[in-house]
Length: 563
Ligand code: GLC
Ligand code: CA
Image (tube, rainbow, N blue to C red; front, side, top):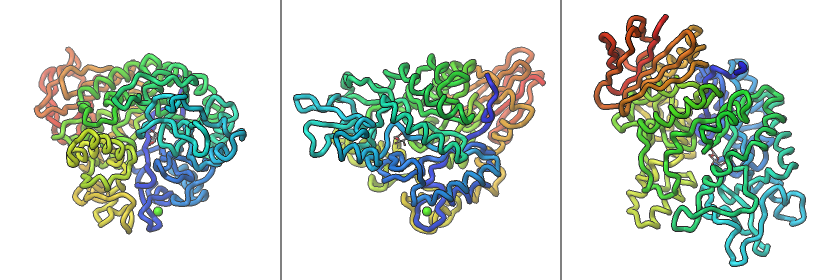
């Protein structure tokens, strides 16, 4: 594998609306990010992904872009953004932008022109199609946010346009070379402006079957999730992705991380590594185990054992190929410690143990804002406290199936994307130091230890533990092994994990125990002679006797085997 500047770095995701408000409007902004750069530096972050800050009507929180060239005034000015790039650079932090090009906003000038004039060249920037003669839309796919992916064009006869997400997010037609040229030129302008790359949004959806055949219904609404179409076409998407890489990323030695759901592990060689379409892709294999249906009451929990096995399979497949980007959570997910590990560990201990397990995997780990504090899902008292449009669709479906309202709320609250979108708690004041006015989304009481101020001053806090983990990864002595070393799984017992990171001359062992009793790991003959403890998530949680390592419940530990 060729060496790249981003190898061995730790990335962090900021959801700007909820990170830090500086102009007293209850909405996070770019000056807030600038203010907190030293905090990120202290943590050890070197790549910063910022969720969309472009001009947007915010139907889907900025993932509906009306103007790719400018910053939305709620976040600040174009100059603020340039200052952010410059200040971050001074601290050795690379900024990457969110690239949302499966669709734009219905407020984008291209779409407005396409609607205004059937003969406009912009018509072919999107997918306009005639409906079927029986009055049904061209196919039966269901949008990610509910309802058909086809929206009728007002004032036109039986004509629809395609939107895999909200109807205000019309899909861009990648089969039109002009659209691709526009996209590449836009990306290059941003790269020239000083950003270091992109997180590429919803990208598996750009490939379409232009005959729009639809799919077998997956629910009694007669529709099928559009995600299933994206998965079905995932092996055909290469022609677009290689072109994009060659025309943009490669020319600037930039970084790209794909939001590529549903990529079979056998395709990793095409998606990552020296010849990959992306520098890396998020490892969503554990997340993909969650039932996709909008009927949340049908979803079964994904246990840590399932998470671990999916991750191990994925990691093994990437060993000789390239890097994956392991994640616990992001702005589309509930908090990981509230979702993937036993409820008894939805606390500081669980946050440290699960964090250790994830941060030492092979790849480029992404930390989502607040994960380093061990944040868990907040409590939502009413559906009206939830803003996320996807959750409202889930809630309506529950009620349609006659679920009791309080049960519906409980189930939807467990899944909602707002779990991760509530404001970042900086201190224990009324609005958590996020803002001095009431924030756009309710803040929850993080008064005890779940805020930055409390954790900075406590050397045993989750935050300070994350710092240690990150320094271990970057420690000159171990970084070669923790960056490039193969991943080898040695897990056997439920709710525990054992894996090695291995290079020719080093072996590092990472043990995690999320059971409710201690876990005994047996070393191979001779290994115990050269065993040394590098890090433990809780003081004195490890004991060794002969070939046996005993790890206390709710803990993780990292060992060096050999010199
Ligand atoms: C991605 C984003 C999500 C957004 C969707 C549509 O999945 O992460 O927040 O709603 O794409 O752009
Ligand atoms: Ca603000």
